[in-house]
Length: 239
Image (cartoon, rainbow, N blue to C red; front, side):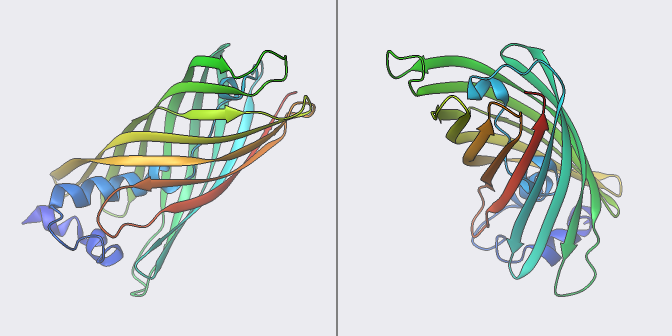
């Protein structure tokens, strides 16, 4: 069947996760998510989630590494962050994913997408001005990856929750972001799609004086024997 033919790169890259009753839809969803920014890179926590107003454009540069059964998937992208309102940030990103595998037949590909994240709640945990707070948001992202002969598309949504603290000069925010992703792989006139639960998180360090921030994070799309993307993010913007 053409369905299995155009999932050939899944067969090359991911022999381990296909074990134990995983369906073609599971495989397609997982492949699409890790072949697009949503699963290939660590999540970004927006400025409103840090209780910080973003008044001007800023840029985030991300790197993610995903080991897949002895192969390596390395992804780099840049995201332009655009303030839409005091509590909402829109992002547009593009990058490249490089795949190195044992067979030496794996090709890299272009990735891209867009997202929006808004803060829904901002709960102080004390009575002083610099008290720690919990922020809760809602995030949605659409992304794609253009593999040789294949198009991967993902649509994901999540609920980030952060604990924001630190002195006036810096914000430190460990966060977690459970979510769900829809993945679709198409090629040769055929297509397969499916859904996967996801979990992201990390720790953000944001300067309040310079606008420079950094974070370490992870992103996981759940599938049997699947690995976790680990990565770092550097954010550059106005104060």
